[in-house]
Image (cartoon, rainbow, N blue to C red; front, side, top):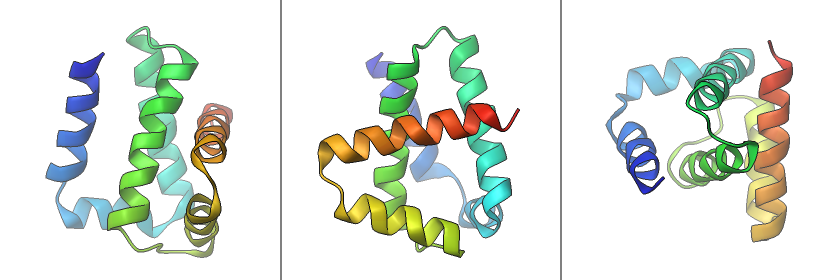
Length: 103
């Protein structure tokens, strides 16, 4: 599982800014991207808990390194900032559920 953590971290750090901007510019594009990644995680046999942990890692990265590009992302950003670790984890679970609902 640590290998997956490393892959996620590498992917976040090595995705070029233009691609990040394209994904983050529109909330529906972001949710479709997240939905695809959740589906991939499920195909790899990851549990919902593990997928939520990875979503938490991505959300933490975005909160620290990327400015919100739209009102939905701004809301998620602010919720992330005011939440404690447990609330952030629950928000990650809710984002995974929302992403699964996209399909």
